[in-house]
Image (cartoon, rainbow, N blue to C red; front, side, top):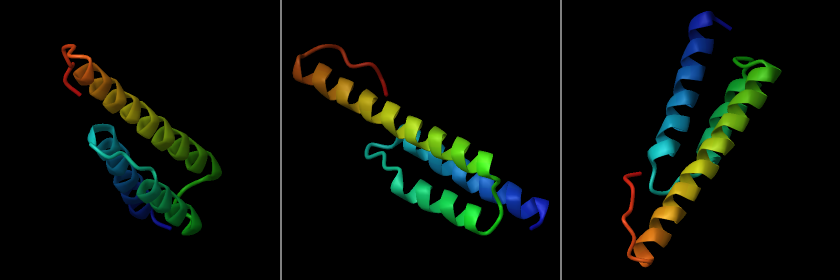
Length: 83
C-alpha cells in the first residue's frame, strides 16, 4: 500500500480517537472497526494495531470517567469542571 494510504488511515483513526475524547457518549466500537479494517488492508503494522487500540481504549475509559465524575459532582451540587 502507498504511504498516502497508510497516512490517511492513521489520520482517520486518530480523528476518531480525538472525537471520543470530547464525546458525550464515548464508544470504542467505531474506532476499533476502523483500526481492524486498516490492519486487514495492510495499512497498519502489528505494533500500530496494538498502540492505536490501546490509545482508543484509554481515551474512552478516561472520557467516561470524566463524564461520570461531572455527573456525580452535579448531583452533589459541587462545581463541575469543564469537560
